[in-house]
Length: 313
Image (cartoon, rainbow, N blue to C red; front, side):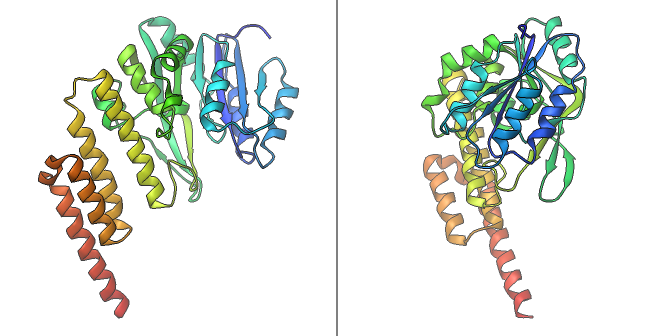
């Protein structure tokens, strides 16, 4: 297999039902340059390994399989799959997502080749809610600057293309393996990219992000959703402390608190809401002056009373 210009880094675990579509969307890419697909399979309990092996055997010049005898966990699998990528550029695509534009890689490579200062570019994407069969656009705005990405990471991982040497520098400098509390590896990567290079947003929609109800980031369990959002904002706090000026700290803390309180205004008990609010205020007393804390509490109490009245009818 000749050295490709682009490597597609695809990690997969228990994606048997979705993986063929993801792989086919890579094989359908129309380019004038070499593209390899590196599959990182982490000892799935379903038929994912068999799907990977079948595709690797069918396309030995285009697909390579990275796996092991034992499960290594999502973070180590993410890292070892990247390390196996040989291209100048790396495109990320999880095994349950897919690309909807056969010219995705061509568009992005053309842009990156024309702008050596750009470390990563990303396109628009669609969100597909698996449980509902519903598709909707992603963020209406697409940011490329550090300050705005801290509170609103508008980058969809499956829509990215980045320079491999910069990804390697990210791992060496940030050492994400030393942060087990970070529940994602792409958010800190793109924040670091926004500090160390220029980012670009392309207008085309080229990818589809599948939202599964049992995933870490889109769980139906509200406490897991809050924990994931907390983790994202904790990543932002770390980056603001190490790479920012400190001026965004309160904005991040307010975002962290308001997302949790909004969720708890719909789910959980009043006691749980008050405990979270008090915890946030103790960490940052200035949050007591923000209207959403008391406002969402009033909403929660009023809706609980309304629900009780309706149940009595």
